[in-house]
Image (tube, rainbow, N blue to C red; front, top):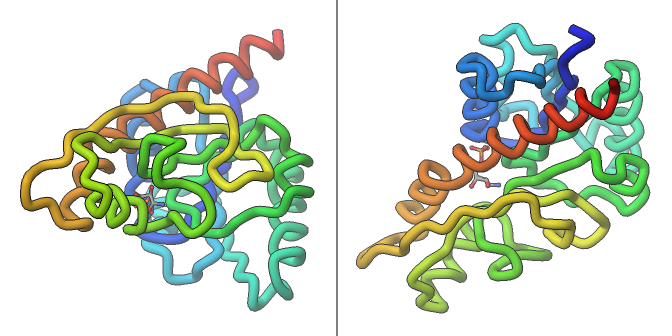
Length: 204
Ligand code: GRF
């Protein structure tokens, strides 16, 4: 539909953030956006099942099959550009994209990071690692950040953040779940909704 921004989501794993976006689209929260494409770099990502259930077009592009990161990115560009994508959302996506790729899609890619940037971010801080580091440091508050993606890992302009309390006895897994439930799954859909409204408005 012309009056909606066309959204692609890149995933690597369980896809709970993708599910939050799908639910937000169905509830009308993401009123001016439509998820039309999901790309996974892992063929066993459960996120793909979530997309297929909704009839969203999916692609699996593994670095192995596409000859490394360059081949992966070329294949992604071909699909993304042929589908006229307006916004690319990295949701539980665990690859570091090249400077060339993120520059080509300047200010069109956003990411959700499971910590309050600039804490516990950058190279190597993915999956449980931000939560392990937060517990090791003894912070009382952590959270999630949505940011634009640039050539520096987790270094792009911050769009939204939400704080989450660290509780006595938290394990990394318990903290990860709380950060997803109380932060990621809330701020990512709101950020996508806002950006889609802006994209559609700027078309007029
Ligand atoms: C989330 O904490 C995400 O921020 C991180 O991996 C976890 C699972 O993401 N990258 P998802 O369930 O695949 O969206």
